Length: 182
Image 1 (tube, rainbow, N blue to C red):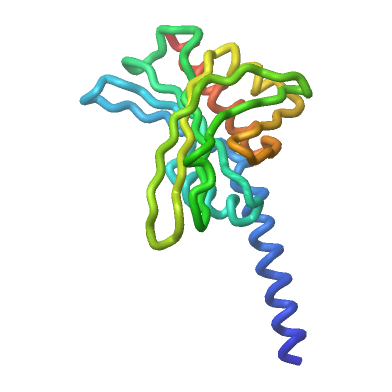
Image 2 (cartoon, rainbow, N blue to C red):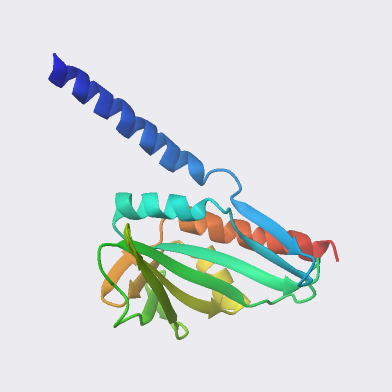
């Protein structure tokens, strides 16, 4: 009887976690924040994304990709900004310290990627790593419009999933909406 209850509880928990996993990216996750001291606006993923990325990392066993655009003032002036992107990884040891070269296939075709910068820290929960890079607006839009995006980061290969693509499209649309207010 205890085993049955344990299995039922595990089934309910896994179902709840899966439902939360599916649900977290269905709404708009993009936040627009204006810093009046810097006179700078940032469009980025929700502040809770780091917690979600850790959870996704454990669930999917791969890094998560975040996106953001920062511009001067409250309303963007530039119709083609640079887009900041970062892979975030939580693991037991360094995965990308010695090799963080980035390559991409967009709809099966190679896409030239910029150089990356690596940052990380060791804490009690393991190793936190960030691999940062910038894309032009056109390169970013190419990712947003793709049916399939695959990355090779260091020696690890993975496909961008629906959460990342949804987030890219929300960041792009939010920027375009702000641009229209000009």
